[in-house]
Image 1: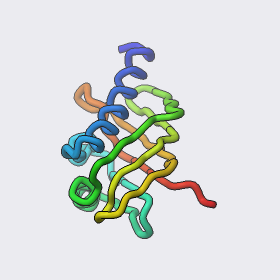
Image 2: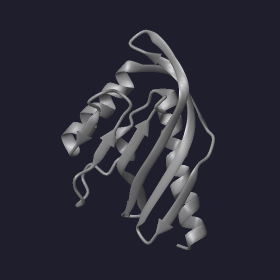
Image 3: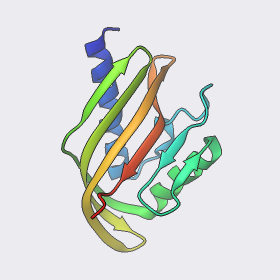
Length: 133
């Protein structure tokens, strides 16, 4: 696969993850929860949301799918780079939805690392943060 095709494949995974979050479909398939590289890490916007390891990340992904509703994500500045079987990305995303019955909306910053294994790109690190004011 060439760099351009790899970049397109990684971009597709990131955008499909956003779409899965909007649709409320399972998020775990986007993460390499059974790969040889550990630890898998997911960092979210809530205090204490720093999950490390397969079981912890799988649990927080299920929680996100249960608790966040009516999600709408708009990618504003997706950039990414691929080097061999590793890729990383950063994006500024307008995110609106409902969490535990309360609406939310605002800019968030996303970054992550993906690894390719068995011709599939999956997250090994995902970090979502809100701007500090």
